[in-house]
Amino acid sequence: MKTDPNLKSLLSLMDDPDSMIRDAVQKRLLDMGEDAFTEMENLLPEFAGRIDPGYYISYINNLRREHVYAKLSDFSSSPDPLLIDGLLLVSQALDPLMDKQYYKDLVQEMSDEMLLELSDNRTAIENLEIFNYIFFRRFGFKHVDESVTHPENAIITNVISSKRGNIFTIPLCYFLLARYAGLPVYPLIVAKSFTPAYIDNNDNILFYINIYKEGVIFSGDQLKKNLPLQDGSDPFKLARIGTDKALVSIYAEHLSYLFGAVKDDENQKTMQRVLECFGEERYIN
Image (tube, rainbow, N blue to C red):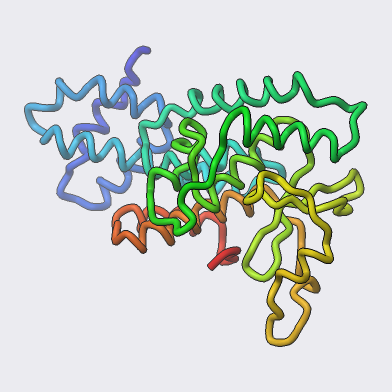
């Protein structure tokens, strides 16, 4: 790629003593996008003599994070964003160098395998039973961290690879693969909790799914029995079907909670910035 002639001029001002100039440089570099960040890395040897390499790399990674925050804001305002994009953007805020395409390819490979066995000629329950078998038995997705205390089970990219996750990330993988497989499984959000629900073409709930018991199907009556009353009122009065944006927000909320619990202040601050992109509504805390 040919270097933008303005890039070197901007980089010579990145540590200018005038904060207004530094801010203007950062804004211009952000506008130039991800290709500019990669080219900045290539230019490191040229600037290493006058700019500390550690500061230079940190500056680039900060630009990448700010770029991710901007894309998350776009995601949040989009009328119909893709779940995979949001989940990977949140993960990329933690790891700016993450290879998003690698994980998209992994998900696509798994969904392609599922699609070979699902059929429009089967009932919703039949297709879901096949989906459950492949998800839990063949692929081996498994809950291993009910206390939500291990970061390796909390980051969706790790879980996509290892098939081991916590009480939030295994359901998120379930929703994600269901979306790729064309199964209308969405979260019913009730009283600071979310329950997977299978809906029809008119957004009516056909049944609920217990992901913690390998996708066992159950009814609304059973769900009501398990939900505590909120101040003596029926929590179902405020229940609603959650969007994919809600699921991405839940992912960031759970990461914020975990990083707070393990005293990882830096990553918790990152998740707080991510959550700001989704407004003030919270789903699990």
